[in-house]
Structure formats: structure tokens, C-alpha cells
Amino acid sequence: MSQPIHYSIKPDGQASITLEVYKTGLMKGKKHIFQFDRYEGELVFTPEDLEAARVSFAVDSSSMILKDKWVSASDRTKVLAVAKGEMLDVARYPQVRFESTRIARIMGEYSVRGNLIIKDKPQPVYIEIRLNPNQTDHLQIEGNSQIKLSDYGLKPPSALLGAIGTKDVMSARFSLIAVPSN
Image (cartoon, rainbow, N blue to C red; front, side, top):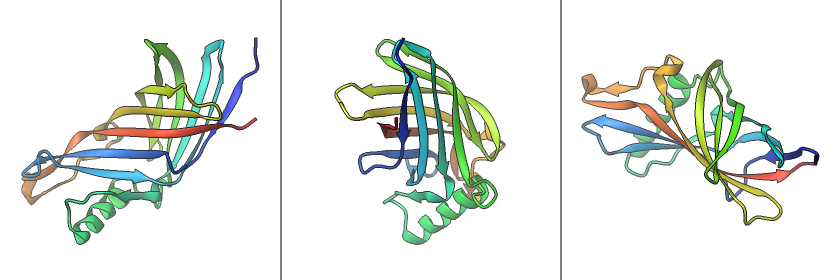
């Protein structure tokens, strides 16, 4: 049996981590797109023993930026302040973390189960992952997951007596580069 391969996951010009937060009411059809610029993680696996694989990941919550082009600069500032202050409380909880509990291969893709930890509250999540097999010096990892705000005790923000709101479910999408570290 071969030795485990250790990969390091860090920001790269080709990588991204985004959250898509969907609006309701008068803004239905719009979405806020948040991007995180600072993160690090580790992927460890032995090609012959996928069940023993594990991934851990930490995102610097304060590195969140709002990519929206459809809101004014002053509204972007307000939206970002709510996201960082009220929703993530980055001053008290500087990281969002993920720790896998199970990885399985399903029809050429990977199913990753684990705990997503927001504001020190772990909740089980399911992530669909695709690996780009054409890379020789690194792995390109693409995936997505759905996250419910209410699972973390977070109330979706609203305004104008509920005429403008936010859906409880948001989409997390990522495209990451993992480089061998041993």
C-alpha cells in the first residue's frame, strides 16, 4: 500500500470561494455574491484507500468581500457590514471551518460529508466535488454545497417590513488548487 499524499490548499490566482445569497420579495431573482480571499486547508489521501481520506479547511471570515455590481457603493458597504458584523460576527469568530467525516466516490465525482463550523456551531453538510485529472503538479478541486442560515441560528436579513428579504438557503461554490506538500 502506498503512503498518504498530503496536499496544501491556499489562495491562488485561479482559485475562489464564493457564497451566493439569494434575495426574496421585491428583489427576487437577485443575489449577493460574497468572495473570501484568505483561507488554508489540507487534503490527505491514499489513492488505494479513499475511505481514509480527510480534508480540513479554515476561511478567514474578515477576508469577505462583496462582488455585487447591481447595488450602489453605499449599499455594498451596508450589506458587507451586516454580513461581517451581524451574520458572521467576525470579531468574535474569525474563522469558518470545515472538517470532513467521510469521502466517497460516486460516478466519477466525490461526495464529501463533514462538519461546517460557523460561529463555533458545527453542522453536518454534504459537498459535491469534481477533480480535474489533467493536472500533473496539483489538483484542481471544484465543488458546491447548500447551507441553511437557520441551521446556525442565523435569521435571514430583511428590510422594508419584509418586502425585501434573504432566502434561508445559500450556495457555497469553490474552485481550489491543492499542491503536494510532502
